Length: 124
Image (cartoon, rainbow, N blue to C red; front, side, top):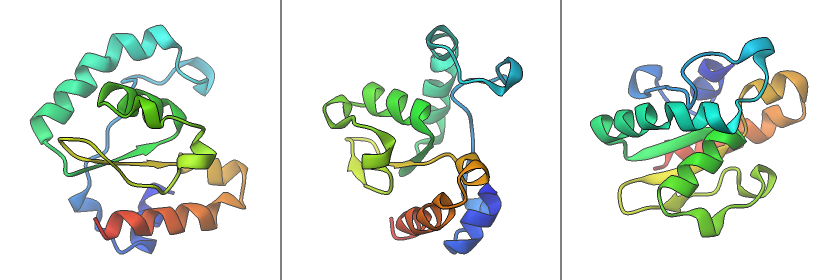
């Protein structure tokens, strides 16, 4: 699904680095627990430090909440349904919250929204 969304926005997969906030899949594919995010956060922070991205597209609410809180955008935090597709600027990079692509598998009506939101990334 992610690759399809990138293609629909005209973004080449080779130009994108993908990582996860939690480095192993929680049992039963459940949402990550706060302590799991806390354990793995230093790894994500270090990846961001090394890669020095111009844009971070957060996929889903957990990564959105973490990245926005960690990089000085906590005052902008709201539900992902209100923030998706909007561009926020930090002193290091831009942040674009997006629905997680898997959401479109369960809620087909989100597919068009995701496609439009991914187009925002192409122009940054």
